Image 1 (tube, rainbow, N blue to C red):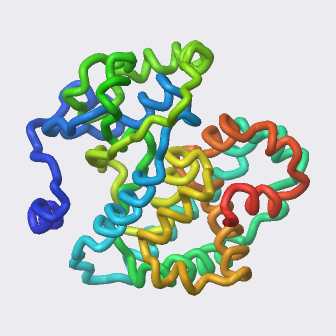
Image 2 (image 1 turned 30 degrees about the vertical axis):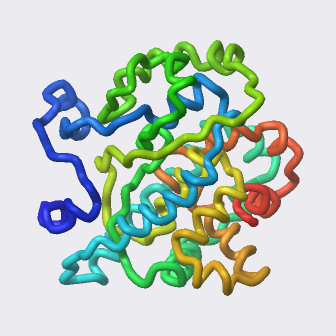
Length: 303
């Protein structure tokens, strides 16, 4: 609460209104907040196809905004304890990793490539992940926790707005009211979405849903941004990283990029919200041609 109050003006955070009573039966209640203008990017993807949406400026905007979120001043009395808690959180996810992968859209690929045998031991992974993160951001920071296309709000040109299936764009605190509709209609919308001559410019208006926020190393937030919002487009990844920390980006060499890809791919497998489904959705044919975990890492993360 103190973090929010001290930084409300700079981060333009919405005001809390009330607790969502209907969500109390779930693992955690959601705060009902004032509405953020626009539509979530996920809805735009569904109605117009991902390849019709121009996201270069969104990637630059996200790089700057996510950096500001990560720069939120924190009063951490025991940083080592906070580091251990984050490591324990990742280790718990890592321990569920085999089950997650084998029961996910990546199961056939995992079996064929013996992915489990190619991963770093967790302790080694954690040390290299921490060092890689600190190269870009020097300390633990406030993470959003699940910055995906459902939690990024924005607008598109007026001449396309009447084609959005979610109705008028006064804004929303979440896309969850339309989730059931989206799940039922995903295949139809993908097939029926128009093939446009010019790409639609998406203008971001805000980030929502901090329900998964935690203290941790900043690269954790990059997983859903790249796999879901960017759909693994490495040109967008480059734009994001340049705007997050240009000084570090300009020093990267080939070995740095290989390390980045390897660590980020293992982090992708560990990530709690199963980003594998996004990778398979957009890149299944390419993945079928992969012959090793390193090849997948390079394909998804090495730019």
